[in-house]
Length: 314
Length: 241
Image (cartoon, rainbow over all chains, first blue to last red; front, top):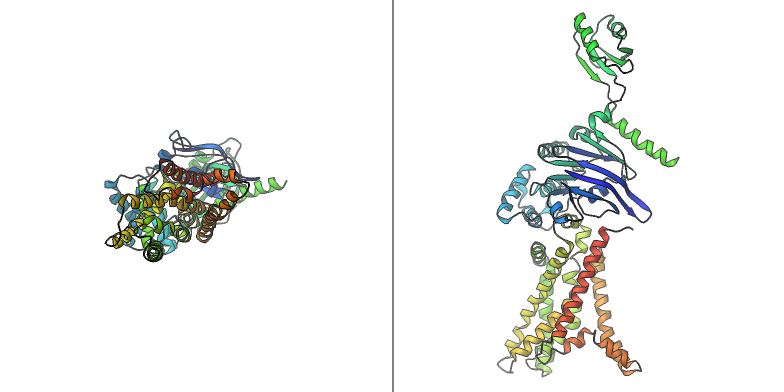
């Protein structure tokens, strides 16, 4: 497990990162969201030991990166925004060099390189010079480089930047598969990608963490409101509104032909789900959908980052 | 460290830099040999030959060093090195050792010249070896200046120009400014500063003697420059602006 505690990075008077504490657990894909200049890359550079913090510490399984950098760095795979590949080497040479400096034992190197290339579906390009690769393949080879040695933690800075939709889907699949036994952190500008890939989100703004939580909690609106969908049926809205657990109902624009959507606001401190279900069951009306009302991630992101902006101006 | 050394060695021969360096060095040695040893009557003296190579070596040394760290920063591949388990010292040493190896290879080629003249002049193996060792040690310093300049710049060209500038400055100071001091009322100061002169230290090798003090001086000088290089790379990582 990778933890960062009170990380700060200052460049003179400019504070790139201010007291950031984060944690990445095994099996989790943590998404790092933020506008340009929010401090995402700085945070990733600090977590991987590329730069040192002004204050704070980074630990992997309790080991401080400042005290034992070689041990920690050997267990972190990093794909920065620009894949760090030597343009004059072939893909295989570049990965072989990376495997050697990552201290992967010589007998295992070849197998590791082949496995990493297979994983990112770039095995056919092993003999090509890096400088001749397309942006998409460079990104794949960069990911293969980060995956060498199966690091405990994989940190990816904008991994799908510049990729076409097919390549993005493949990249996400590789990340998802890898996260099953490892910890992964991904930064992205694409909210849809974060929503699709990550189960935990950290929102950064102006060098500070403005929110970090599980995706479903971040997008839940907090009121406990429910969204119902059922076939058009007279009087159902009124019957739901009459339930003692319900405070108010409001019809929503229908999203499916022949169906009604209803937003149900529960009474204070009440969970209306069981009562709603029983009502529909008793009346023989099939309940096609019942889910908590969610706020779009885009709205959450905009609200969080605008709030800090207006706070800063005030 | 070995991985970095191997990569840099491969790099010298994947680009024209390594061939250019060895080619120009050998060509210039040939010219020096023709002028000093054959026409000038220095016979098989490698010391005379290599003394004449001090300035030409300064001119071509940037070919070996200017890319080493500057190019890593420009192409962002320093992110791979600095996030790997390698320490900064291992990275800097691996790169410097590659440049030193090229110098060694160039010096091996110069052994051809005493062999060429051996049927006509007596070749002293001891004096030859001392001259080669002295030149090698002296130019570890020249190359280490280049490694440091490469760490200070993002552009290879700037690193090359700076390397040339600093080495030339050192050369002019010890070759022209210091002797002026010796002739003035500052002769005492001259005595002190002369101890730091690379050329003056190299001169002690001409009689076939490899002095411990000289060896330690050259190695310390190079070591100090590499230490500064390491500090420069580390400082940037911990920069506060």
